[in-house]
Amino acid sequence: MTAPETLSATTTGEGIVSEAVTALFVPGDRPERFAKATASGADVVIIDLEDAVAPADKAAALASAVDALARGGVRALVRVNPIDSPAYDAEITALLSLTEWQHHGLLGIIVPKADDPEVLLRLRNRLPADLALVPLIESAAGLIHALELAQVRGITRLAFGAIDFALDINADSGDRYLDHARSELVLASRAAGIAAPLDSPCTEIRDAGRISESARLARNFGFSGKLCIHPAQIPFVGAAFAPAEEEVAWALSVIDAEGGATQVAGQMIDRPVTERAKRILHQAKKGSSNG
Image (cartoon, rainbow, N blue to C red; front, top):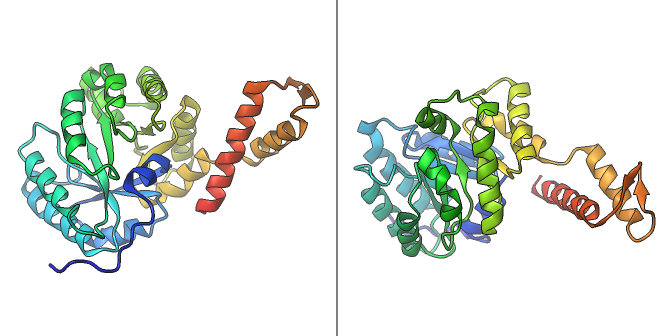
């Protein structure tokens, strides 16, 4: 394998991941899909070495991920296997070796079943500062420690794994049965001063209405992005997190009235209202520039 020459990093992995709205999983043992995932329009790609890969194929998946990220042309997060799994140490060692390459495509690491702040801190200390580190909260223990995890120095943002979480607490995995968990992750992220979390993927792939509804629910809880399991989900998730035209029109009317009128459309204009309007316009501008 020769050192790559074509991949230039204009933005750090930490920066890309903290701003991502759509994050698309691609199985690590399907390297022929890596380039397609990169071209899918997702804000960030996640090469998955965990759930999407059978135990017998994990070594080959790691080799494929390392090769693609070292060669250039693919930039991605990597979801490793759980910290207590047989594959974890080899995966971390191999991924860290990529950071010795000047133009590697590794954006960071997602740690599944995260629940121990001390373990996350040790991993963070091994990673270059420009790489993202995302704990995936998938258990009762992870939720209880969510604030501590979010407060670990250098954690980029949290992510929610609803299916595994529901299994852990013996609950239905439907969106509204997990309201408490979603609220806790948003509050922990805000209190820790990190980016709002990524929500769990919608299990529907082709039902646009269900995908959009799930994404809007996440946005209304305070999430700022969503994990995706298929490229078909990306446009609907992106649209759900983008301000609607009527929201932008309302925000513009509020900003126009700032410092003058005390009401707009019957609503009192004070600092929280103007700040919300500014945030909507910022989101709309960011979405337009990304598009």
